[in-house]
Amino acid sequence: MNSAAQFFADIVAGTLDIYVITFTLVTVMVILLFMSFPMVVPLAVAALIGLVHFSATDPQVIIQQMVTGISPNALIAVPMFILAADIMTRGHTAHNLLGLVQSFVGHMRGGLPITTCISCTLFGSVSGSTQATVVSVGKIMRPKLLQAGYKDSFVMALIINASDIAFLIPPSIGLILYGTLANTSVGELFVAGIGPGLLLALMFSVYCYFYSIKHSDDIALVEKTDWAERLRALKKSILPLGFPVLIVGGIYSGIMTPTEAAAFAVLYAVLVECVIYRQLKIKDLMDSALSTGLITAVVFILVGIGQSFSWYISFEQIPQELLAPLSLENASPEFVLFVIALAFFVGCMFVDSLVVLLILTPIFVPIAESVGLDPVLVGVMVTLQMAIGSATPPFGCDIFTAIAIFNRPYMDVIRGTLPFILILFAMTAILIFFPGVALSLRDLAFN
Image (cartoon, rainbow, N blue to C red; front, side, top):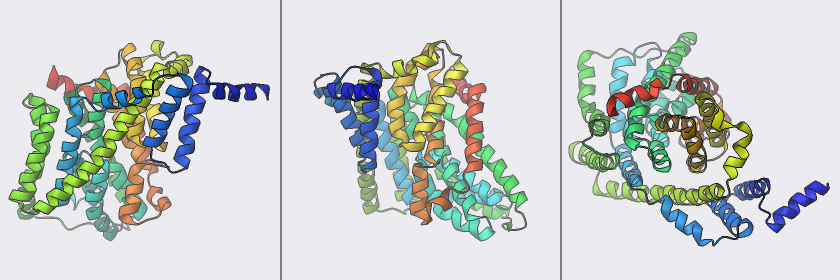
């Protein structure tokens, strides 16, 4: 009892004890979250309490760190990729990509769910956003899958998990933000994400094939498409397919930086949807610009506040003290990578993945460097955990996107997610023990 009283007395007195500070910051953030404040408020209040109450530091540091957080040039790419994705989501890009994939594999056993996996991969290479992929691919494929006899729990789990591939396939907003925070080449991260993204799409497709065999009595096959229809679908999809080829090819060849590629992506999206397809009008572009401005404001405010919070906990050496018992500096690279994956996965289960990225990246990057881990491999691993967290109960953002889009209860949406989460865990193990899956293509491109 006395020790507990002393502990709370230390909190009131502002005693510079790592455990006292950590308990106070976590308690404040949890209370504010349960009071339904947006995540930016708990982060800002926690940083302010730490600076003023415990460290007696000028609170203007928060403003300085916010400006520092949003200053890197690489962040310019974020709003431009968001705008390009919004334009293509409003247009015919998703329909054309889905039509192409279905014309080639839709008639096979498991063809429709495999079409969904491949389409999520392709659309992820256009949008870079899991939520945009859930909306664009899910709205089209869910009715087709239900009509063919697939259970709704399987369908929704497939859509929200296959959409996670968008986190790995460039252009990925998660990879851009990690590269900015960790001072790592965004171009190398983009290329390194391709291998794991394609392998994950293959693993999901294999599961869909065996699921369809197991439930073959209830599932109807789609009529096979003739070659004339396939050629028409290919013709419609040439321009959307050119988007990832030009973006990744431009970065791969050194012609464009990721920021220049983002600007080119906007121009390409406008030309395809407004000039060639003639699907969007000036009003649609204005709506896309407004939507992009709102999303970018939210992202950049989070980035700024996250930088302030990360600076404070680094200033107090809190991460180093809390992780000291693990002796990570002397651990094997595989164990450190496992700890990083576990920390990001658990964090993303409960908090928005962007917030977890902002808080944990400055903590683990120095540790990863001290044991010789390639920062690009760490970036791909971190982004994979963000993808897993976005589709994992209780608070994965893709789950709530699916609830809103499909108008289904929470339990219905998450019921079929376990097999896909296990596949994502297997992908995590592959990256830990076979890093060449991510690094081989990067080495080929940049060395």
